[in-house]
Amino acid sequence: SSLIENNVRLDRILYPKPETLKPPRTDVLTIAPWLAPIIWNGIFNSDILNAQFHKRGVRIGLTTFAIKKYVRFMKDFLETAEKFFMVGHKVNYYIFTDRAHEIPNITIGEGRHIHIINVTGYQRWQDVTMRRMQMIRDETYSRFINEVDYLVCVDVDMRFYGSVGVEILGDVFGTLHPGFFGASRQQFTYDRNPKSVACIPVDEGDFYYAGGYFGGKIEEVYKLTNFCHSAMMTDKAIGIEALWHDESYLNKYFLYYKPTKILSPEYVWNNYYGSPAAVQIKRFVGVDKNYDEVRFR
Ligand code: UD2
Image (cartoon, rainbow, N blue to C red; front, side):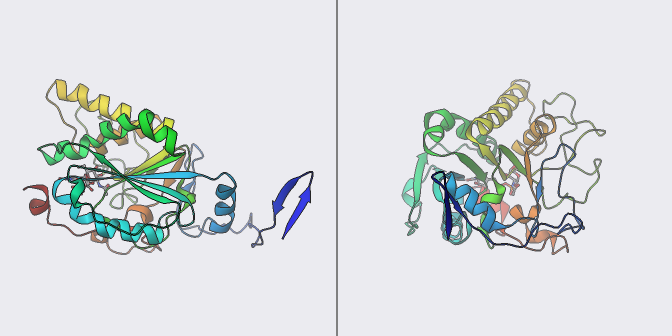
């Protein structure tokens, strides 16, 4: 049903009203001190969000990297993304790979497309993970800006088990690492070497963000990836590499350029961390892997 007023079509959506005195979650922080919402199950209504984003015809890019042996994760990743990632919206998958011929042929839903981007695989696994910043950055103004409105940049050794929708989208977002959402500043595994651009002193830091899940509008992803790559190059020039590689530089970026939206660890879970009560849904979960076997030829 719809109302026609001054040629504006207004679609009715019926849902329970928000209760100012009854917040849906009281067990977790749902807003950062700089007023970025922290997205937990139960605090949002997907019907309202979908209606808002459909009106804007939003286009979403999902970037992932399948370099060397990591192509083996591609099939599960894509098949589960088709079931759970931005269902009903326009989605472009951007797969950066050095093994294009090994990317499985998956049937993709309407309005969704797979784009393969050929890149070279660096020798060291640390360089493979860190160089993602440069490779994403280099595609932003040549490609992404013309094709999508938002980018979601994730690891590939993962599977979707629950809905990941437009609730995650915002100017620039990061995700709480599943191992540290209850941790103190001292426990955060930030880089502590004062010589590194990634260094965060023990009396600073808000959250520990996961390297494997960030995104936002194209301009913002450009700024983020450009900062991280430049910082890595600055360190490399004096023979330094931050403790957790790209993740350390990402944490430094988010300390000074606060994310406008923060995703709970539901969005980048790992079963290594068990099943804490706060995590009601594990939407995107790391696949068990033998690090030594998968990182080397
Ligand atoms: C964490 C972070 C990861 C990165 C890394 C830095 C999460 C879930 N993961 O994961 O984003 O910050 O720490 O140390 O927050 N890759 C390949 N081929 C390779 C090696 C890596 O394609 O040979 C790609 C692949 O997309 C993979 C990603 O790089 O998912 C990250 O590498 P990882 O999964 O080995 O890193 P990990 O598990 O230490």
